[in-house]
Length: 113
Image (cartoon, rainbow, N blue to C red; front, side, top):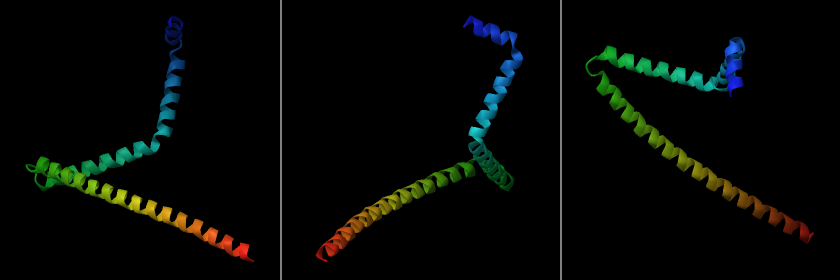
């Protein structure tokens, strides 16, 4: 441990280069997440600005109400997505079963010849 501290104190340029490479790696790995976060931040600032310019006194109430509405609608959308997924899964299973039955039917037809 002492040798690592000595190396870091005697080679600050190497430490800066390693930190730069680590940050660059972090950036490329999470580039899409960073872009998404920036876009969401811009949208949040635009919505907040809209409400502030519309009526500065009611801004916090309007934002809180919109957040509640968004949370409720997102919950409904998630529930609809779960139902659609379950329905798709059921259709897949039924198709799999029908394919198996059709294969058995064709096999029986070949055996009769």
